Length: 150
Image (cartoon, rainbow, N blue to C red; front, side, top):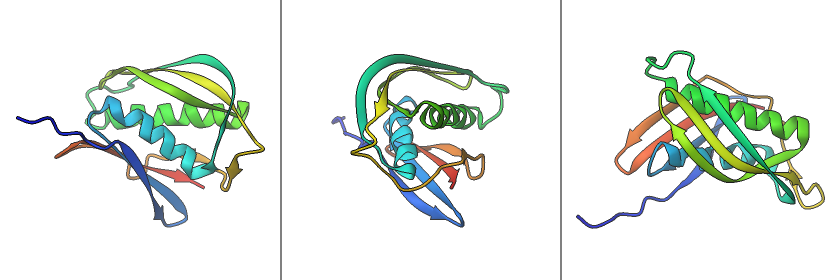
């Protein structure tokens, strides 16, 4: 069977007074980077500034037998990413997913400051919600949907 390349990315969509993100990738692990990029796109056009520092996120599932355990882990990870953005004005680059299972999401990345002079923050994202949260298998891989409160 010939190898098929699955595009990785995200799209934003309007959702009542909120904003939604659909990320897609060839695998569940592959969803983490486009979901992170989608979250940043909800804020605006963020440009990394420099001074990279390693950062690691290890999230454990509260109820791994829950069919939505992976989606909940992704939401919890994105909430941590948003916290880093809001409190430290830093964003993640060079993400590497060590594990993404119903039990655990483990991500290593570089945290860099945001170049405020070249960035264009258009919205304040208050939270990543549980509303419409999902990860589904698709014909080409996986898709994740999440809604942010703006």
